[in-house]
Length: 619
Ligand SMILES: [Zn+2]
Image 1: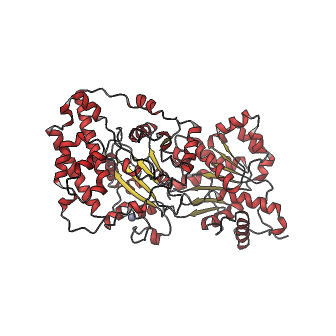
Image 2: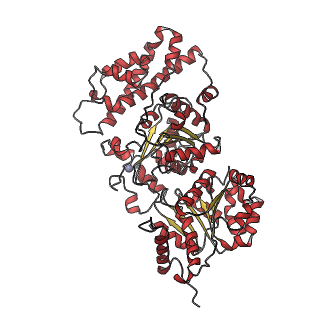
Image 3: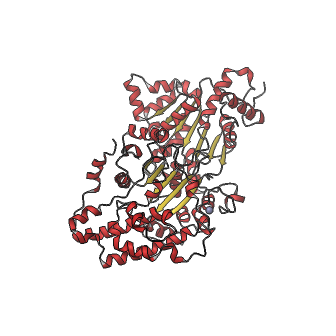
């Protein structure tokens, strides 16, 4: 009897395409290139490391092998004989870093492929127990086709028992490490069990299966080698499939954060949020997340149910609340903004997200790019990644690229290169991740004809700003009322009497200095919009506006009152710059407020305890 065909042979690939076309007719073009390269290897029980952009359809790598085994087992005579044994009740294990991600994958497998899957999380296990069911026994009996589990649970006696079950051992066809970059990042310190995924896969289960890893962000060199070592990837059985992780529909910008990251005002967010696009805001810590939440919450129109519009997504929020947030992002036109802490945001898979805003940066470029990967999964829409970097971080990045030793721990080199990039941020990322094809990926956005050039290329090439056309509001969100900046100033002013709303001479000087910086920014930005190079520099921000603002800044507490006051002054950019000017002014106001408060030792209300109860965070 002939030994049977390989799935990676021509016959095998053809069989695979035919099965996919029959079982998933909605995929009119069949499998994508990276799926057609990797799935046959999984079916041939090979080991693979698949690196590709988010949103490319990685869940097919879990689902299709299961469907193929079932189909061939049921209709053996219709298909050629294959070398790999075909299982009657095929099972796959997917190890994921967060329960949010597990729940997401399970839902996607059920909705898209009708695959019975189970997310092995504490909550789901408890729910089974309450229903009087023994989920370990169900798994060992192959009642689930795919089980998502975290590495900590794999070390527990339950999984020793499951992996001892002869039926389970016979039917397991693959083990996958999802978001495999975390094995290197997290395995070293805060979740050491990530280092043991490989030994479980290899030590506890038979060798007739595929082990594969997937991620969007895996730098070549030592991070990659470390993950390979941990998963036992080596020798002829191992295949590396590296595709580009560039997202052509995502525009990248890096901007300086003009307010203190430790403060409670983030006015730079509002112009973006007022474009009414579904937005994820990434923060390093839950505490910063609360401050951002409260700032946005305070400035949201009161007429509107703010708890739908703005949501927190963090490890401290109740599980049900987090689940609901993802549902609302997907299906509810009232839900616009989710604030997520780093790492935890890996759990958010929502195709509707369009803007990703980072306030400050995480430790590594890889984490920063993971945050950015939350948006633009729908390749037909244009998405944005905006990174607000603090001046301290920027300073450290410059020092790092110039190889100057700093007191703090050295910044990730890739991150420092990305932040200080002078030619093209996309090509920098392509170099960091060795994204093929290097003939075009290393070119700048214009040379490479990218759909959405990065901020550095836009400035270098004097490109028109078409952001209003390029980044329209999310469908159904356009009717949301805009955010307004309410200042605490008006209240504290009343306490201080009439003179309080007039800046002192010293304060007015400070405002003028600040506005001079803003004027320069307006000039740089506006001259990109239209071919108006013959316009005198002073027209961009007439001195009358500086005079007016330095006098009246403390009386102007809404964008409407600013527009009103500016009416008599001729200015070309009134409409395009109104929001930005107002946001900028509020940072100047904040400086005055802070300095006055520190002088008068005006007692501030504790930020979190009072205001968060006002906001009723998890209503
Ligand atoms: Zn570029």
